[in-house]
Length: 247
Image (cartoon, rainbow, N blue to C red; front, side, top):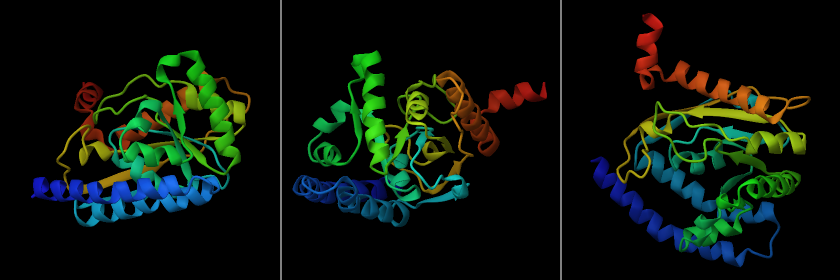
């Protein structure tokens, strides 16, 4: 059954993505917030099919922690699910993403019309400058900037080094960092065609005020909360640590 549902979901995306890519291209002259709402219709449709066709539900903890004004969001990255769902969980957002995604037919073309921050990952330190300059512009336009600090999708129970770009932007822009943990990888594995039904828990932590802190310290506090929350909510992902804790 998951294979059939996943196949039908893929067919849905094949049909709706070119339509919204066209919407994106036609909306180019419009203000960023209006473009976001128009192109975001793709997300609304996708989330409906994710819930009622794939059987993937989600529950949010800590929504009261979301600041009323734009901030930098540091989020665990396990699948494509959170790139879709965060657009409905949070106020208007933009993502820091690799520029090559914009070259994908239809999907990338529509993505390029959204107010995202496309960076050249091979640019080294210049990529940090791109995040800072474009990020401050997006924040001033009213968008919350979502950064996946591990840089790529990671499997449940694993962790990669947290990169400092998001923390650096929060300090330069003078806005808080909002940490988010979740278990999307349980239902939607990286590069997996077949999605599994179930419930995804999204936990939003207290905002971190960067005032007087160095980027490394902001990053450390965000990582400590996210990884601690992952272990609190999903201990089965870390069986080796549980064994060590009882030894």
